[in-house]
Image (cartoon, rainbow over all chains, first blue to last red; front, side, top):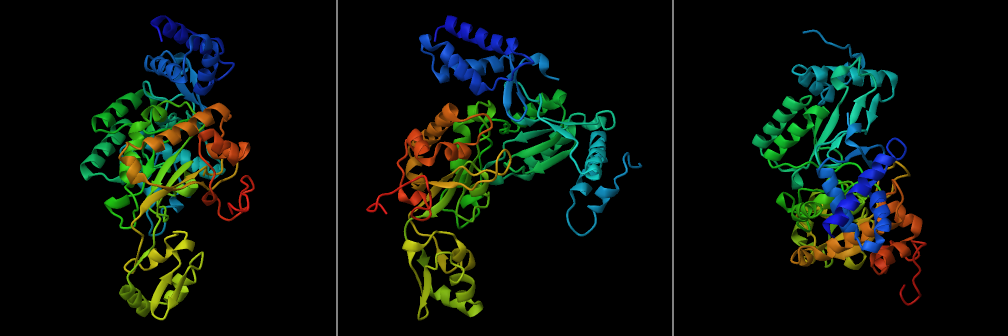
Length: 79
Length: 395
């Protein structure tokens, strides 16, 4: 995966969560499936997407929440 | 110092000669104001016969999606000490072995950063530090890490694998539960700390079918120690037991498959019908021993009642040569687990445990999906499982 693709993927994931903030809770598994479709032409594997997601979480661009199941949300939502 | 909250109902739970969790909370409350509020909160819940905790929400440490279980009181003004009362799940050691120095240090962390209460161990197996506030979570976590402890699982992820004491203390262990539990924990760190499943997934390892960690009923994937060859009999010791108690009544008659009988004074076992339940070995440990060809059975799909009803695990792999696979770093087992997660990822729905998925899509489809051939030993009795049909010659 090139740095450019990685950046695109990162922006897409964070953008998606931002766009639906307060309307829809994305489970990590949903994000991975969604991105697999979105980046099908670039041949990204699930592991590629998961590793980018891991970096996003490490950088705290997104954080995990729990409501019956785990979901991704914006750090601002953390109390 | 007087009590901050009156607790007549909790006081009832201090009566009698038994250990009381109320007494322990009160002892912790002597040093912690927030734990005083915990007593009030729990009393309130007992009085109203309903929990007043709100569960979940946003609680965690940096980078991890698991390990801190969010809990908040419904009455933050009345009980400010438990406005947040999160549980920090600390990955326990394999077999729950600690030295007293480490336990004191963990207790110190609980006193400094939480309500001074520990739960050893939670139902999944972790050490739980109770009453953590979000603001102090990161520091408490870092202090645990300095002691060599990581956080455990939580949420939609691999929950902390757990195992019985195994060969470290138990003569019945048929495999090294501690080693495989440790190896799987290390191998699947990402899956444990970063929730990416449809729902929770538990691995539990029991050294024999006494199943001291309740793997068969409480874990999605249960590993139960077993053996292939004959039970070893010491006839002299059998005779000693016959002198001590009614072996016919308490051992032979209680054998689930009635595969034991006396021929004269000698005990005879039809091993082909033995289901390795451990009852006879438990009753006469000096006389009977499991065989030499040891390994484990893998069961899949157990769960407690939550979204749907409870399930016991289904026999997935009747005999897995764990010792052999351990020489290859458990390559086969890790492959099987990864295949199952892949299938669950693809076809599971939100909050669906893997056993429920197997039930929904059917065992045949599930087995095809994970690359396992159906075999007769997966079912208790011929035609006992409506999903798998064997032809006459296979019966």
